[in-house]
Image (cartoon, rainbow, N blue to C red; front, side):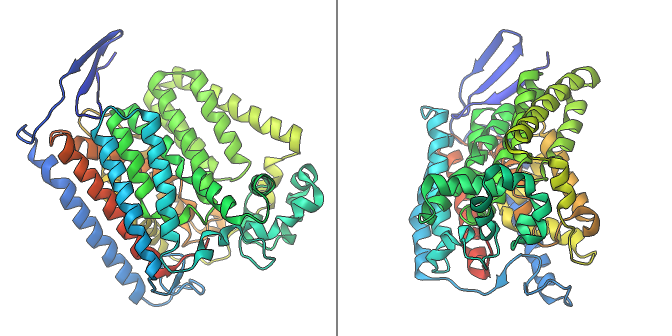
Length: 488
């Protein structure tokens, strides 16, 4: 068995020397401990360089000839360029301070149990996301993603079909009804999205749109649990906690939590990915089957789960070999097929008919998006994830395992975005939303990097850096939310 090293929340390191043998080294405290020069300075340099590169690409995008981006005047960001900050933006200050403080405490104080740490991260994240939605001064921005107005551009404008037909008949007829839907999103996704919304509306009441939107935000931010699980598996408890709070503070999750259902898909997809990472680490078929089952639930709502299938297959085979990998993948396939079979028996859901009925992308191919799609996603990811998280995919972080599955998945998406939309059914300019499932994975990678970076700085100085990175991300969210009127 190979040696595996992780770090606890206070900087101590657990070294597993073999089966049944664990040695706990004393925690490292104080700033006097030696630290490699490259780990002392390169993260700061990476933040500056990546920030400059993204700003340069944005400036180029704003000044190049038109590319047929519809009524969105400032590519590559999918929104209307309309700079505005209202006095309500000041509400972000206390929420951001609390979120930064949570990051400081949970990464510095070992007495906070994991369940409480994650609860604090999720609750403070939802509260901060609510204040971000108010930056432009429009309280309706909290709920416009769940508007049932017939002219609303999102899924809920088609929710009346579920009420009219009932759950089973709606799911069965969904493929043949594709042309009747008002929302383009309803046409490009399986019936499970509207079933999910219907259940939310029945539970909370159609008149309580804020409660419904908050429930969606809570589910979206809960992807922090998957981030923590990946980070903890690869680098220890502290790395997992840092990754979780960096995910919640990232501009994309904060800006989309109250308005976009791609974040709910992301929670299911990233939890499946996290279970695959754990299954690979433990060589566990039951965990792989659970990962497949979670992915099956996600497939009822989005076809993007196919990317997790491909990335997980590659990661499993690379990390476990053919024989063990075949057992894990068989277990995963069994879990996924079981869920889809139950969906077919109970609701009449036909995944193949649903996919065949979904339309292709209407926009013409433009080579600009080969760089613009990753750039747009990195802008929404925020500097800590864009710089440190991406670096952590490629660098060997001391004391941590390699995030193979996240690296494979990110690479697949970058290549996929460069393929003409006629084949991918991907509308250029939406990746900051449709790639929401990548934020938790890269945040887990960032957690590994920040843990290694701050491990020798002492408990409180290390926590202060985490808090500063959280504040930086929240500040970027305020900037982006104020510059663009972002749709659902």
